[in-house]
Length: 158
Image 1 (cartoon, helix red, strand yellow):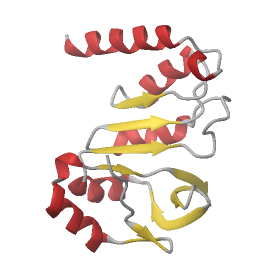
Image 2 (image 1 turned 90 degrees about the horizontal axis):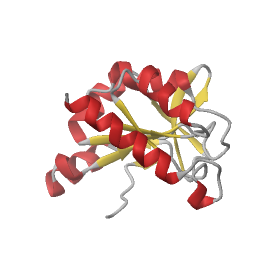
Image 3 (image 1 turned 60 degrees about the horizontal axis):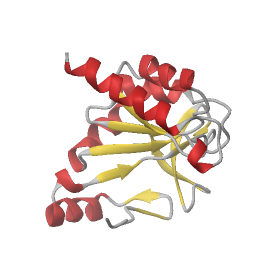
Image 4 (image 1 turned 135 degrees about the vertical axis):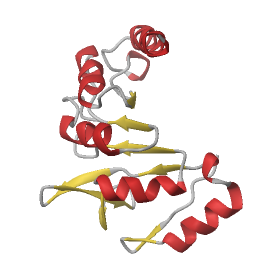
């Protein structure tokens, strides 16, 4: 896996993204659209999530960027790593507007958070769990999360 940057000085370089798609194919790309709230909107952040870009996560942006990737990865940076709950508003936005598979990360601390993501994301947003897992020092049993995920896959296949 390689990480290639498509942002420079807070601006998205669509030419670079286009070249990347031409080189490796859209089906091999996952775009990281990790974001933080700024003036009531979700701005994509860069440079270890410290710098706000001029690109906001919203319906038109998700629609446009879907042409360049097979999946989006979106960290809710405002809640990431804090284990204080998810950014439900962001999950709802992703579930309502993302035209391609999307994985959300940030703030998960309980099994209820996984259910909230499922509901707010309209069953269209996947989740990744990090520091809340017991294997990383958290309280959430890894085996329980895996079991829940497998159950969700079975339900969606019916």
